[in-house]
Picture 1 (cartoon, rainbow, N blue to C red):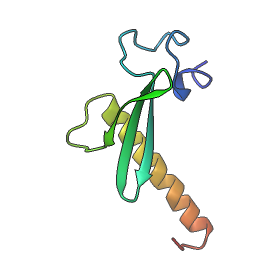
Picture 2: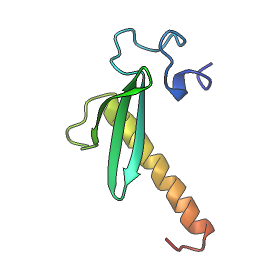
Picture 3: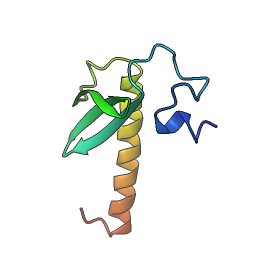
Length: 87
């Protein structure tokens, strides 16, 4: 259940763990060079966006941003290792 709905965004009304008062339905992250960008979505449209500033982030966005950055770091390190360290 969690893998099918909760972790993919847009779980409002489908997941018992989704907060009733949440402003956004999903959060997306992307790397732009060294900058981490976030986009909050509601009803499949952008609600808020910006650059992640670790010292200014509110929870739970800060925790999600840290998890994304760690995962992105592992993924890019794995790609660099697989390509012989180039990159």
